[in-house]
Image 1 (tube, rainbow, N blue to C red):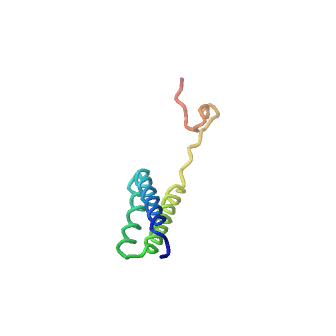
Image 2: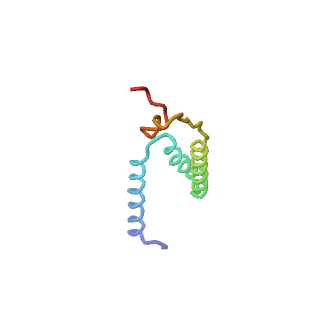
Image 3: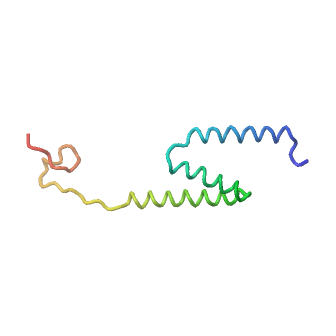
Length: 96
């Protein structure tokens, strides 16, 4: 026997608790897709390596999408005088 049964049982309990904590902390549709798709793929294919590769690919695509979305250029709003910069936003202030 490669791993004695008591040690295998302890490992399975640890992994079960770790997965329960993971499920408790997951929020949002994008995060659930990263959790469920690799798990389902690994279960269907009977090989966790496929799930691991799918999870890495999903996270890389999600990261790239967010990075590209946040790097869109914005149009700066320029103030004509120094009084408009009172609050530090650069937006023109209404006359008092």
